[in-house]
Image (cartoon, rainbow, N blue to C red):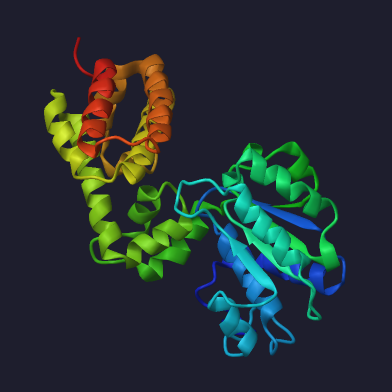
Length: 332
């Protein structure tokens, strides 16, 4: 990054970054900042840009760190002495109380430098004990320290944690603005519109999809599996296609397909995700299900997503999900 305009930085985040830098520079540092917004909108990108700007020793003006100084390099390397970033040990895992004890120890260490900062992402991954352990620090941060939390599901945080933080909401921009941002990165076989729909309107994931051949292959597998589901009169071809997919990405897309079916039943038209498959496939599928079964299937799919954390043979899991789905979808 540099102190001027950062070409790769999402433009919709700049309006949040400037006021945040000015707030801290004015000396009115809140003990906690809770950044909320949908998954993939750029909450983490925003906070990390802010942290690098705070770590930078050269950028006297502008929104971004210079990217060259010792402060910027140590931040990018995860070794900056005044900044700690806390994440789960693995995606989908909890942030446990031991991680928060490390935060408390980090903030309590005596030092002569600037106030320390801690970034917790995703904050809703903290379990109850971890969140409770954080409360005391939020109430009385040592040495003017600042805690930054990013959460796509802030309601999962205890109200006591939320109430002690200043709130910063990052909404999803208009689709046209996202499309314009993504168009320069389009591929011959993957348009900005398809990438955005495939990633459930999550702009940063769409941007990554346009750059990542492995992610594109995974999307093609997911799309084929969903097309097979829409076409098939038997669960067995669907099971075969599901076995070729990562359920962690397929299930949210299945949920979006069900939302698209509901939209079609209510509005009589297809949304952006449904247009990837066409009315000739989605229409009969939605009509055959009806609103009640579509809603019930959506609730089922949320449960299947939660069950991904449980140990189970992947083949058995795919079979179980498809057969449970088919009890509602398949012909009686």
